[in-house]
Image (cartoon, rainbow, N blue to C red; front, top):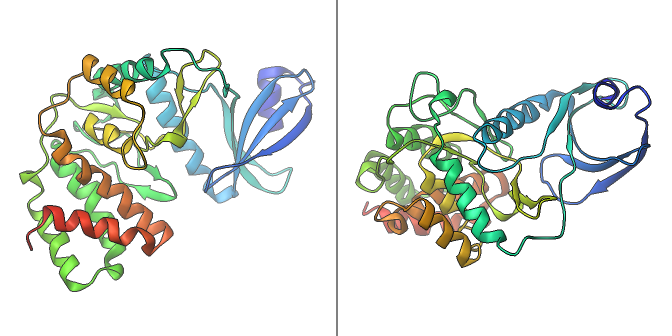
Length: 294
């Protein structure tokens, strides 16, 4: 990490203060202040978990390349053998408390612009997926290229999570899950265009930047249907109405989105079930009963 600091700020870039920041289930997060007063953001994990950070960098870089919405500048990532062995990600510190007056409208328009940006360069050999696998939380996320969104969501999103969660389900739920996977094309639709997605867009994964606008952090990026990002913004409590109004004005949703929303969020609820336990089982079962007659 010292080499990364020296590359950007010179050999005199000593660390004046290191403060732990609350939040984050996977990494330890810190505010790092240099002797010149510059404040940076540092994430640390076990040395064997470097791929958490390399895939995060890939996702942030993809989002930044659209020019639609801002992300923190990446200063470097790697492993550090001088301190207690660890992997690290070092970024600029962007968090601010002062929001612009049209914060939510601007966020909605910028997210719509990201979803409308060309995305073909991110999926070699297909229309949906990503150039590399990454993580949703601590769970490995399969981003194998597919020509069909419905097939991708079935094979790379729902099916792996159902497989991991099978020990939670009674026989009736297993039957419902299998029926849903076999008939997913009855409910989901192909998008008008493939969109680069943040992939984990809940309220903890955007911050207010120094310009007073929303900046995206902690992506689980891939190319899919824009509806999947919108659905997750509603999973743990909706964002304010002006966000959705501005998004819809900039990029109108296909008819029937509300009928599909719970299916997109089923993926995240299954992941929470697999990561955190059976508190999430009733929500998963409700969605299975909603869509499956089995």
